[in-house]
Image (cartoon, rainbow, N blue to C red; front, side):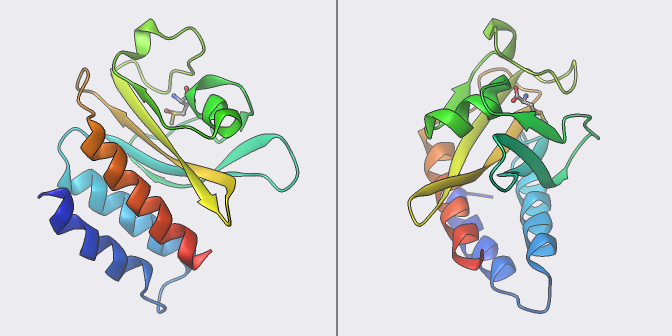
Length: 151
Ligand code: SME
């Protein structure tokens, strides 16, 4: 399914007030994983109050031990500090990387802004080497903007 076809589905899920906000985000994770063949793990991390750490709120894919990530650590922790998209074509080439699974080859992390503040991020792991393009970045920025609207 194309990103353009996915966008209205994402919006529909996120605006369904019959579900809790976390359940809606969970459904978006599932939709993305099911629809894009190189998305193997999809999750949302958020800043833990005033602490300089991220907490995993919801995800689909292999179970992970990394439910709390300090700012600055790993790809996720770096994005919490940089406020910038981080596309990793080859995770093995990264020094500051937290491995969740040995099968993961690449990763993309896009910060999520609410009122201009970096409050969290969407994180996607892929078992395909170097699959992410600017189209993924634009699409995931859209997803995060839609999530921000309901937070
Ligand atoms: N690889 C991430 C850790 C989170 S897992 O991908 C679920 C990182 O380096 O921050």
